[in-house]
Length: 408
Image 1 (cartoon, one colour):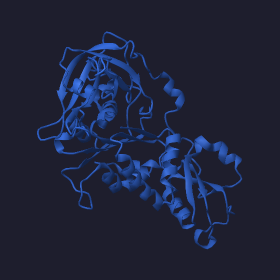
Image 2 (cartoon, one colour; image 1 turned 135 degrees about the vertical axis):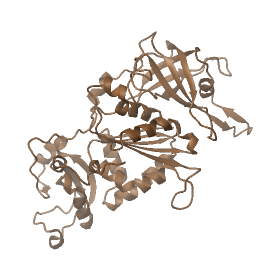
Image 3 (cartoon, one colour; image 1 turned 60 degrees about the vertical axis):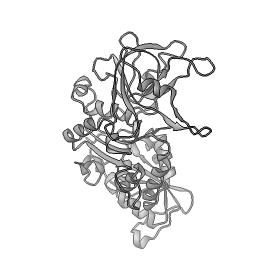
Image 4 (cartoon, one colour; image 1 turned 90 degrees about the horizontal axis):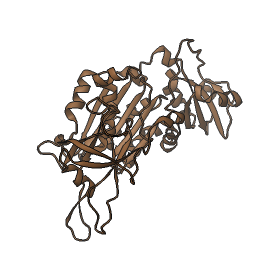
């Protein structure tokens, strides 16, 4: 069950007292309809201070006046701009409550310095044993996907949620040279599936495609190696790498996750960290109280990876975790075609847009690169209703470290 209070519709008095700075271009003033006596510049940008609980009304007013919203930023991060700019217009001034706690902007770059990177390199990889290799696709599903867990107890390979490790397949290529490493998103938390800080897990799909030259079926070298590996086997591991998909430390954040197939891997790690009882006990400084929303695209119901885990979390934390499936071969979109993740995004675009206005909302996308254009199209249509250019808005989210993409 979704808790509407976190979307802004029933914002608390604390949220309502927070202020945001709108940068707007192209405004024209109609004093009769807009009831404003403040002079407005006819060219360039103007900056308007808006309280949280008036954001929707202000967007509508700006649209009526022919304005285009270039960016929306929390005042606590841009106070200097507002103070230095004579074109600031205050709309419905609000006096913040003295006890109000500022919303978290995003994980600052400085905090990433402690993230482990390249502890093991290709010329000196960590050699870990396979502890387990379990199938994730049910009967009637498409393809082969495995959950593989490796032992890390003999080395110093540690990581955080959202990172990747490299795997160097055994054997040599057609030229007799060692295989190159392949990167895979980590599907476990920093504590590992066994909560002992001694394992790392991957979610791996066997790559399979038709050769354009011969028409023969070709199987991916590393994915096939991993999907068929036996417990007890040694595997060369590198890394960890990656700082793009890190989870913010803010326990009140809103986390939007858009995944296809094995793109679920980092999100499984997020959800374990947020909701698993053993994880919550192990992380006393991180007790998630925000909203996590996963929109997950798969071809068939048996392809819903970690289905039991996801639905157990949804049942236990209905106010904090929202789960939406896009099952392409079983569900239809409004036009009668297959239901892909971009159709679900378009269906919920208004809610997603409203959540994205909060400065502590992070959006993550992981999986097939083909979903990006469709998601952009759905969100662009919604943003235009508010007089906002989606490309510019998304670019600003990226600058604020709130838009995270890892696609292939």
